[in-house]
Image (cartoon, rainbow, N blue to C red; front, side, top):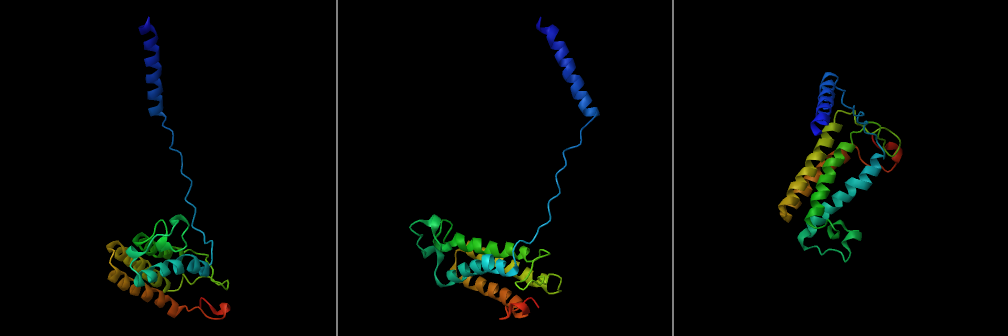
Length: 180
């Protein structure tokens, strides 16, 4: 009795399999990845990512991150070196933040504080951004070594990269004159 039902089931399964091969359905299309859009101004990136990350690195020059005592509640610490992801890990993260944030400086449409476009089409901008990216990775690798002398040298490369841009595009007292 079972074999009488098994044959139609196998036959139906075989037909379904063959028809699926004869008429393959197109794989579902993935929606196009949306283009990156600038959300904040250049000043907001500087103040929200680059400045705080740099301060972590500068702090690591003066005090060995391994010697920093975690906050009583590291999850709410305002000092990144004392936080849940503190000490050397905070310095590593700061280096990665600098390196990754460099890409944010190249998104078309980002504005300076005065409403002018960030000068991404200037010939020197990609070189300046690449200098920041490389400095961030130098800091990251130095932090991985957990050697404070290496951080001092890496912080110097970071300062050099920052100065290269700030020498060309200084933060001028009058915001209307910035990004020029």
